Length: 595
Ligand code: ZN
Image (tube, rainbow, N blue to C red):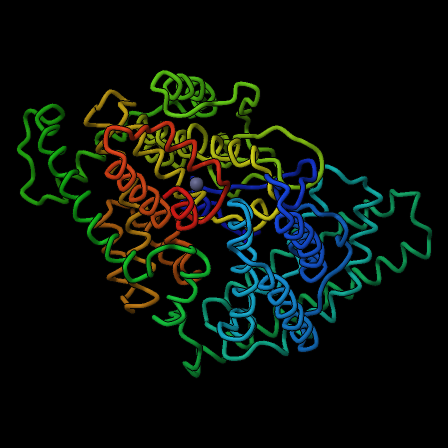
């Protein structure tokens, strides 16, 4: 599931820059799109609908995130009784699901079937095998739910505070259960748990009490009770932070912390559930190694070609890496002014649309324009650029391309950002985020509305599509085959490739921090700060970093296969449109349906 860290530092944000898709809200959709009236489809649609309803009941915190609305006042107590109930829920739903004959379902519902099955099996695996509820203290944090409710643009002040009032009641029991669950955690997750729970106090601030006092809809008794619960909740959060702080010291002294590396067996399991790839993690790692060698060779050729143009008086360094890095650094000085950053993005979107139409790469829907805007204050600080798409529930909204203004940065920080998102990379970012990347994919996925796909959709396909379009646009001549554009693209693409190598390297092959930083800095031309940030992220997640490359590789491979199979009958636009018509589904299932 998607989860946004509350307490990311500004530095961390900019290393993440690029890819945060956030959901807002839209009209309820039917649970599954019934394309035919086959009895099995009708029965499956009914099953999906009850499944989702019960799923939210089982996971109210997730339902808040998706804007479902019915369970906003509940916090689940993560104790043993709750885990038994969860197990029973998963087994029962899995049995119901498996009573359907997959072969009798229409294509779209086949994918829904797979997505539900994967969700249930993954939850069972987490509960019984992976057990991060024991060793990841940052799993426990009440801030997300409170923040979602308080940031909602669809609730009245009274509604917000009433829901906060109800939720506060659960906080002491919640942290009591959390403490009981923790067993030999990793040091890194213990530290993250401390840091993020401290962040809770930026959500549960005394400002809430001032807002409460201003409300006439709460009685004096209710206000007093609210304040009592508020104080108890803060004590409970402090208690959890103290508990983790003591644990951290103990782990550091004894050296008994669990390793943050999950090892090959768990990694393969997690890769299978989270990416739902047609390849194993090991195969994907090997593909990434081969791509890294190929891309590096291409960069070297381009560097040799461009060197005399930019450095006519200077001999190219003997060291290849140094030569490529020098040229990239030089080219990166070409960028927009700090004050023009948002405007330049606004200007580029229609150009990208024009290119897609002229080259007939995809049909774009002129009725659904993308609104480029400065990231609203309440969302700032997470990612340089993101797409806010209408989610599965609530009112129909525009789709926004949020861009963080650089105004708040010092000139030195802003210049560093602008060099990173220079003349060429900024165009690639816009392809990725907007047209024909994330935004276009979203428009297509909304034309085959399936609640199952919008809730349980495949992240690797979504990110993979955006990464695929970067290359596809350049192949079709965007940027006029300028060698500078290709060089910068390869640098950008190398980052995605190296994320896969780094993640597998750390989690499975046990590479050291030194080796990891060397891979990113000398192998992928990254700055030290970015590389350090990536190392940290790779110790605090597993598999997620591979999703961009995995999705990209599978889509590209599928396209090349189709080209071979169809020969001169292959049509790029038809391929894109059919591929996107299945919604945010794992590429391996789209492949089955397209072949
Ligand atoms: Zn992305």
